Amino acid sequence: MKLAILSANLKCYSTRRLREAAAQRGHDVKVLNTLRFAIELRQGEPDLYFRQTQLSHYDAVLPRIGASITYFGTAVVRQFEQMDVFCANSSSGISNSRDKLRSLQILSRHQLGIPETTFVRDKKDVLPAIERVGGAPVVIKLLEGTQGIGVLLAETVESAEAIIELLQNQKQSVLIQKFVSESKGRDIRAFVVGDQVVGAMRRVAQGQEFRSNVHRGGKTESVVLDDTYCETAVRAAQILGLRVAGVDMLEGKDGPQIMEVNSSPGLEGIERCTQLDIAGAIIDYMAAQVDFPEIDLRQRLTVSRGYGVTEIHVPEGSEYIGKTISESGLRDKDINALTLYRGTTVVPNPRSDRKLESGDRLLCFGRLESMRGLVPAKARRKRSPSVKDLPELPVADEVHEEHTQPMPEQHESRDE
Image 1 (cartoon, rainbow, N blue to C red):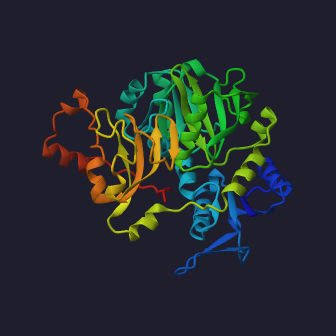
Image 2: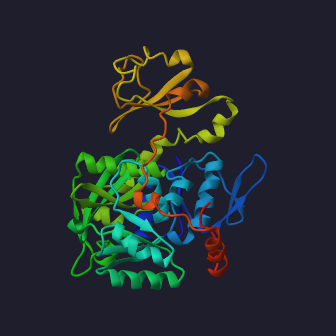
Image 3: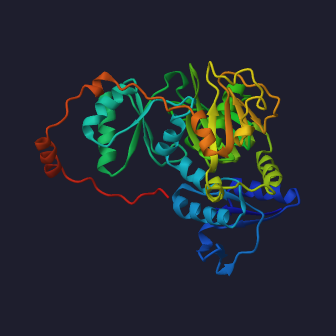
């Protein structure tokens, strides 16, 4: 395998270890400074130049994109994807994980534990937002930050208001998050590679510090996670589109609470704590996957008019319960079952004689018209009476508000 490691810091521990692990396994490996690329766009021929020279062919790319170069770094990764080069983490996955608000928005629709979080811009919304997450103390986070930078604990409502007002005046967007008191000063870092957790450690803050990051002086200890924590970490990484990730979780009374998912997790702390060859596990996974690059279904399926991919549910009382996939008649309707989801169990390419149970979900490819009646209707959330019963503003007030309130500043979007 010819492997490129994208890193702007060639001397850091993680980059050195990954390069060593690849070389020890006989792979041809190069560390390429992400900032030295030039992206060439031509019809049907996406290409890259490195140090003013056309880049030679690579089988795989391992991105180590720092937070300060997210926009350009993800553009380089995206170009490798367009050139059909296997990337350990996708450009969209890196973008999803780098923005704390975006990552929590994506995770919030799934049945995974996350601390109650709110995001506001108007000063009048700050106090109600703090109340909605359980009141003080609350954790205040900048949308982009690493190694514990930009994470503050406000012990009182007054201090929370002052901190948020100061940050907003500095044009900083912040999240207000429930403080999980039972895990104060402790968290779990699970290192996910592919579909498994290859190592985990507990980080414990020292002294009066509530942040447990190693860069903040936190101590580490190796830990063996139970199935719930492992499944939560793997699902969080996969939902965000990451194959290699560090998933940070709090040990809440109701189970794991996901704080953050890192697309370029450091190796030094977890390798020294666990004495495991995490770098080797990453390289071995990539070598096994390099012959099967990810296919963007959105670009492939548009040529199949009338066909697509959707998820079919088997609800309680369904006529399909107790029948095998073959007996369900899906194939006769030009529908193929690709994957069966049963609870936390995933069954790829399920056999035709597998019986369906209540609560099963089938990822299917087939004729859209045939699948239309099998897709469950979207559940409508009941709106809170306090919101539903709010009186509408008179038109005159709306016009007055529009002309008297200053327009919000327009910031350049960091989204793709």
